[in-house]
Image (cartoon, rainbow, N blue to C red; front, top):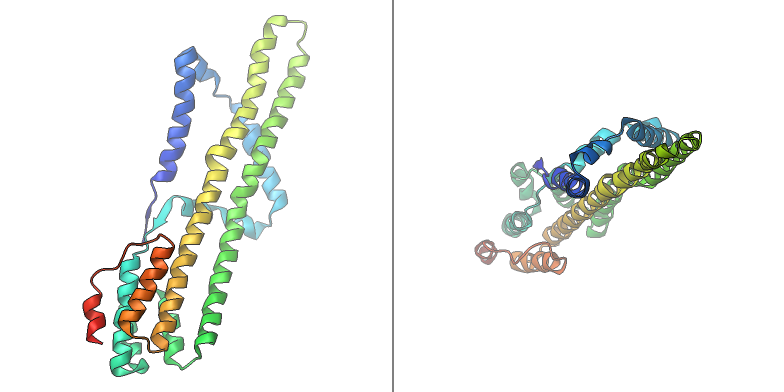
Length: 269
């Protein structure tokens, strides 16, 4: 079940607040208002949007709302519960046979687990089951990578468009060299565009891209645990051994502590 990931908006708010607070402390409220420049923001955001429209296809751009939502959502993976599920399935398979697992799948919500167990019930060889399920994992990684590239590219383009906006401001400033008093304010205004581009890249686009990459790694890890569990059930592994194997697999990756509560189930097998 997906929940709202509050760390993403909190991080963005903290970053912006830190900058505004530093400006306020050093120069007062009037200087904070000076940093809000609609023209500079339009150049940076408009330029990034134009570059992305050129770089990506229409189908890839349609992924942007979905990928953005993912950055603000968090899916909790209860690995303890996952291991308990496989201990239960392994116990039942050893007692009643693999065919009996088909009825137990109604209690399993994860379609990836159901698919693996159904392949096992159908008598598919372990190597083939692993190949089929890993192919799905690879396809998932490729889908996620396509979505993540939207933010990666935006992070690459943002500083460049900030510099372009600054160059535009400098050209306009040079047209008013006859008024020396305007050079300082105009220079500051020109540099704000670079600030916007750098800020968007390093506070929004690149951190979001990294967070999406981490989410993908977590999901791949969970699916690898599922594959190991399915192969263990299909091969008739002792539930206790399967529990220890999946727990060790999890602890090795630092994802979960030792699983409790499954020993009784395993000992009954």
